[in-house]
Length: 107
Ligand SMILES: N=c1c2ncn([C@@H]3O[C@H](COP(=O)(O)OP(=O)(O)OP(=O)(O)O)[C@@H](O)[C@H]3O)c2ncn1[C@@H]1O[C@H](COP(=O)(O)O)[C@@H](O)[C@H]1O
Image (cartoon, rainbow, N blue to C red):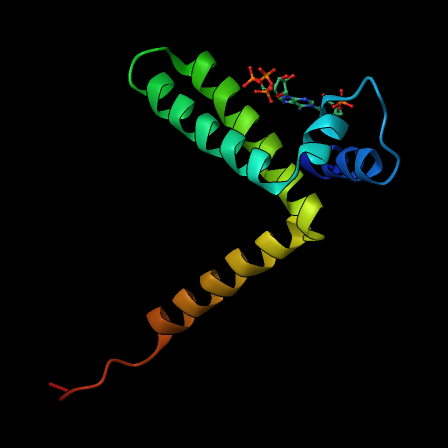
């Protein structure tokens, strides 16, 4: 299991068995609007970091956004595999388009 899957699993555990000492449990209890607000804030922090705070800061902000996106998925009963499936679907679609014979007149 990779770290994203492990983190998602822990977030689901916090959703299903809330803990008083858990930021994740508190965030989930505050509801979807608060999670969406955090996602917006983290996205802006990524832009600020990319525009002049260095690669380490950028990585940290992308990790923050990733964590909050996983919390949103868990709240909605979605899974990281749903995102992978959508990306795979797009990739296969693009491959098919690239492989399809071009219409038009042969020379
Ligand atoms: N990966 C994360 C993670 N990334 C970011 N954050 C939290 O996200 C918050 C974002 O920081 P901000 O300053 O924007 O927000 P804040 O002022 O602390 O809080 P808000 O009131 O704004 O929500 C911080 O409190 C971080 O600790 C995370 N909190 C938890 N995890 C992981 O989630 C799992 C469960 O941890 P608990 O939530 O502690 O149970 C563990 O694997 C943790 O490592």
